Length: 91
Image (cartoon, rainbow, N blue to C red):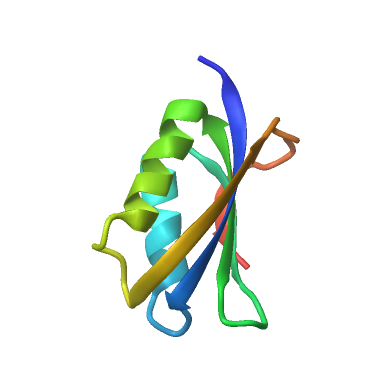
């Protein structure tokens, strides 16, 4: 099983609705490390590291329609993990 790093930018009504908390909960369930943070332009940026399968599942959750708020779109970027992350946190 290959570890990967997923960076996702989620746009829509995703700030002030519990989206980062919800993302953290899903990521921890999947055994991922990383973080979710609000961006000044209204998006939420998510960085997750772990198995490629678990990262892909998190991406499915983000696009799945059961998120808090309203997701209009998700842009993803995949690369090699950088490590050094010990849990999944809200920033």
